[in-house]
Image (cartoon, rainbow, N blue to C red; front, side):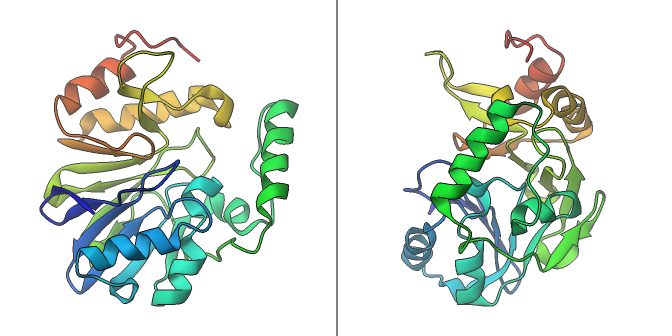
Length: 240
């Protein structure tokens, strides 16, 4: 695991999405769980840092896409940790209802992905989260409902480290050959890109020094300036 701040780590060696680990009193909190079948790599990273899966106190999912929820069930089975997610995404995470995509193309693409992956890996949510909750036993994480990428997308704010776990509301992306920068997720992967932009305005009031993005890793320098530029539309990113 790569240390980002005291008590905050990034699991290394995963493909697709990022998985973060927060050390809290009595154990670890994992934010997102990567693709299906990533649990062995995650467990190896924990062991290298002198932890085990049994140290997991909770797995918090930022939204219902399989590249973030894929290994939650296996990790929960190994550790006994509860799995938390926003109530609006629980049906998608558990596979009982698809996400309400805007176009047939999105529906067909996600349907194909679902067929290829199957459903044996799908987790069951232990606790449904709501906007404004403070998870005192999990390091004081604050739940911010930021719909748009999915209906139940959340960000998690960790006041002690002034760190934001952005899920896929914000990503650290190298797009169209440009240098990596803070961006919104590609519109084609989002249920409502314009709603995501509205949701991001909530972040302007938070004292954020680190953004732990769902893709591309963490940003630790010039964070507030980048958030303001992106949300205010002065970053140069084309409107979706």
